[in-house]
Length: 581
Image (cartoon, rainbow, N blue to C red):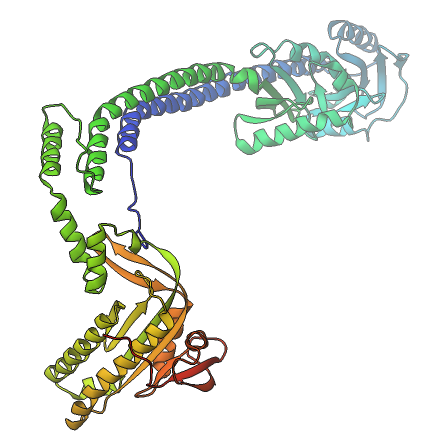
């Protein structure tokens, strides 16, 4: 039906299915999500404790390595430098190199900073070399702080070295300066194992790599680009204040923690690949995901079965009411249960049996007479077919008419006077419309709209429209005489146009109207608005269709409200040939 709007349809099955599915699946998903989050949090805390402990242990061992060398050097500055103690210093120096393999060379200076002894594993030994070491950074640092740790340097650009200087308790004992090969820290770092593939490495304060399980990274020197990710990892850990995620030298994602060695300003970083660190969590998530999928499938099957059991009878009841409402009174709702739905279905079936075809048909005709002329309503009743009221595209003649000056009249008159005028006015027009077998479309205030050639076809819609318009003018003009005698300044104008329009029923289930839609309707309304009292204005299409059978006068082109271009307008006069009555 034209203009009918479908009501939004919401599936009761879908509601039941979603509710039942959510009731089973939501707790499963919630529990799985909470378990995953708690597992991740616990694993992260465990890693923080584990990596922190390993880092502190490694820092302690490296610090002990350095302290051992410092203590050994302290024994070298116990004796004052005299002629008789020179041999003793030589023996102690040789023993020190034998006991501490990390010391590559040892230099002893007296209290004035003069070199007295230099022994080395790779250079010639010197006795009383006479070099002035008073301005040496190691001597200056040891004189100030008693113990001095030099910066890390790279021997031949690869092996890391550091100088440790120790001052004696007395100025006469002088100073001991030892050059330490830090490559031996490699043994400490290589001994650190975290998980299966976890590692540790050591950076000095500027970020140079001192020790790493991969000795090749250390031997590449201070400017090796491979060490840059390790420095960046230290910055990330420092910013986080604990455990952090970053990249190692190979670009692999790792979890890492760090500890510091305050005496030398070094940093020990212990790291574990992220894949290994969260491997247990990943495996647990896979198991949880599998359980959730199985649970969701079970919930879906269960929800579908329950929802179908609940909504099946309701759907049959809904379909049955649609069939009965559509007029299919032979349909029966098949619900055999003895519950409320079964009793409701039985009542619907009984109602369908009680409806009579004659009652339905009378109701249909009653509705038709609200908007069709009695002749058309009787035609539909006689044929028993209202398909002629369905939407279609046809050529029609559209007529509009209304009173001139009615607004001012109604504002100045009493309600009884207004209703009396409208009553006699529409009664006269109704008789004319009925007599010409036209289709009355609507009353609007003091206006009226009628069409010809729909739904019942006429032989000559143009001539029929002209006859109708002239008779309408004649009927209303006779009324105007009496109205004007009472002082009512009212006029009457008619506009008509001919053209294609879409015609048919429009409305909703309880109320339908028959109407016409298209530009020709708008044009007829504009012509009516432009017509003066006593005028009948028509468009060019209707004028051409009338030919010479009606007295027509061209009024030229006029601008009509709502239309873009000026429209040719014609005036119809009386003198139309009448059909025998």
